[in-house]
Length: 548
Image 1 (cartoon, rainbow, N blue to C red):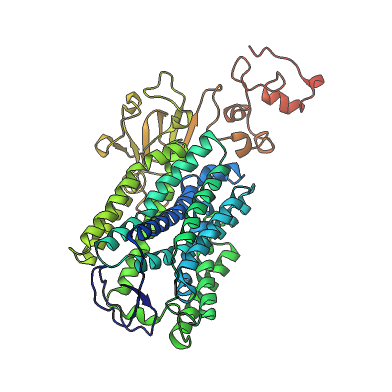
Image 2: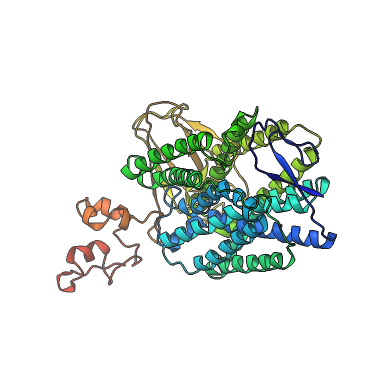
């Protein structure tokens, strides 16, 4: 005998009840449903549901780990505020559809909705494999997320119906909860491997194949299901208001980093989203006959505090992962596969954490378990914030200590820099360190400088800058030069095109790279780039010089 929760007029959910607690939750009707299954069949269904849910997180996190490289391949400028839709598109629709898909499952059947969600993931994963533009790729990722939002709550409901209360259910739900970190690790490894050794489209085809296999198995072994609220009503207006508000709110926050908060349509979307969300709660509270989110649940003693804490924790984890990837790939020059290998401790640690949480549920009050998780997230965020040291020559794939330096830099203070507004952090002598040695806080020296002061340093030195804690702006200008035979770290020919650079003094033009590395590295038609541009490639106007 197992129990499933059916929505009814709710009063108060004021506490968390563990999976082993047989009490009835206040304001909920518990519908008992007989599910007669053999142990082997129950284990098979449980395994296939876990695989189906894991598959969606493999898909979801693969564009977090590989988002920057995929963006570059598809022609999008690479940067945390430019390529963010790679990571956000799937999550946006997934999180929005979670709001309504549980109710749809109660009316039409959780198993049917689970299969529908998985099928959507499979179909649009295949479509993703054949997208050749950034916008089409992101749009299809959003459609894939719809499947994830439908699958996840109905997978939870099906598991709680199939697995009776007790240790088995605790372990099953703990394994289910480990899907995000494990899926993140597997997804990162898969997309990293395909990007390095094959074509990225095969990653999404592989996801579709895994999903097809698990869903086909579930279709064959699922028992007959009677929906727990068959014939129930759907709050269509609530769905429109709720989904519309969430979509526009997420669109505004994700688009603003790319185009700026001052952009008119971003402001309109944000204001309209807030209006829709307010209308949603008013409708649900006053007129909806069967609301998809009964406002009475907010009267619980801990519900509002709990949802607020969980919201900020999820925000923290998401931002941490995205900027961790940005730091490793854009600043340290790591490949996607390298980042994936670096995520192995994350996958293992998170899996151990959810298993530990399941073990603690009957032994420790829920708020204490939540507090432990919050503390760990806080520690991780602080560690990432303090992780600001880098070597400038990392993009040249230099092994340290370097036999030959590739960068010489000047750090110029455009304002006074102090420990409060941006002093320079430097690890003296780190140019002699091996790559495996990471700088510690005790290795750092803080350099405070006055406006107009400059520091010359090698690219193999670890350096960074203290965060500005004041209200006044501070500025540190950096200029690093590389030998002419090496590729520029920043493409100055595009950043400062010739139409602009031709007005500069010759010395500045050469500094930007419009010159050869003797004897003829970087020449154009056997000419100096400056000469070629001045005569517009016309040999009849060119006076030959000895490049050697």
